[in-house]
Image (tube, one colour):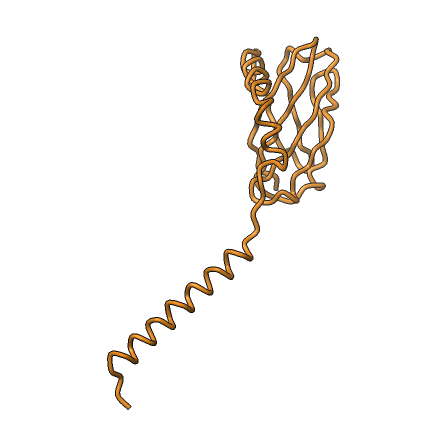
Length: 147
């Protein structure tokens, strides 16, 4: 049996159709997570985030998040020591929303909070910290890799 141009055209079409079907199945099985489920609601309030970040950047030093052993240490700027602070901490994982963790910000008199890192899946996170002090809102984001 010889392959003429009709056979080659049919094989080419079948290969192309098989590739398209494979790509459609792959795209339907790909998991994707939104940054936020309430994206539009948060977009309307984004000016508060901008103002809070500006206030946080005007402080004497930046907020840090470090890992020491099995402890994550959140250190707020020096001006926040001996202050009544309320707020929240979100550990945001860009690659998997199931790894996200949100908790209350509970700092001691030295403006430090420690968190057990074993409660987290290892990976890269963006720590989004919102806090209030003396009627002013502050906001900062710190990238951290948890081992």
